Image 1 (cartoon, rainbow, N blue to C red):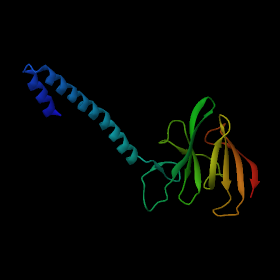
Image 2: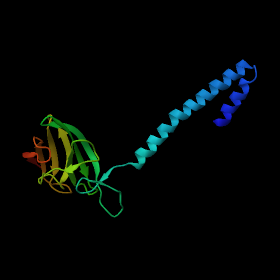
Image 3: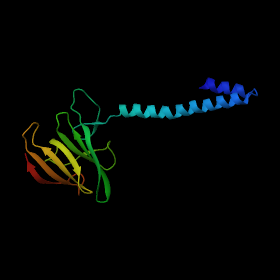
Image 4: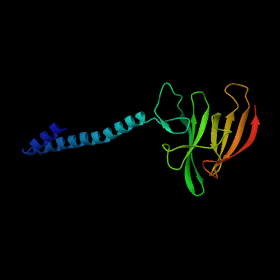
Length: 169
């Protein structure tokens, strides 16, 4: 890039205006491409390097072959008492999961106090109202197990109200 710029500067000393214009245009295109491509490559590299994994208490953890870390399978915003929160569903490799809440982002999650749901086989989470969700849980890991639908209402974000809506096979 610096060599191209010196070449353009040397042409400024001569009177070859068309050549100066072509080289200036070429320099602008190359320099502009570098400015566009460089941040894109950096953001792709950082996205790959920053895959967020969590431990069993919803804290950010370093990936480890020995540990059974969790990855998000669900994220949704909700509002409680006039404040916005983020609900994140995490799933272990064996299929069991956790629900975590944060008032800010995915890096500051806290475990939700929900004994009926935590560490269960959470199939899906569906937002129903501004602060309630339908959580479908399998009663085990396998076939022919009962399925439960719970309504989880976040009037108190870290201590939600949980109500069994339906049980079926």
